[in-house]
Image (cartoon, rainbow, N blue to C red; front, side):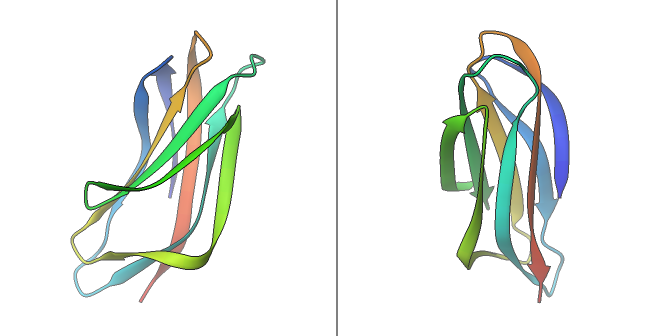
Length: 102
């Protein structure tokens, strides 16, 4: 699941989300994201499952992680991915998370 959004500096902006279908469990296997600016600055990637923050990655310009053990979301829960950038500008942020349903 991926997406982009225009993000004001210092603001957490949702770039992608997915509701887990009825009768399924979604296993999140990876996340990555960043922004499109020549300015190198702090970026924070936040993953939420069912409204609860389950992961924060910090980096410069972007970050990503492949999980050794997937994160689990059950039917009806929303998996959401937010990005905060601190460039001092309004820039386009892009992010993705992926996995599989069982």
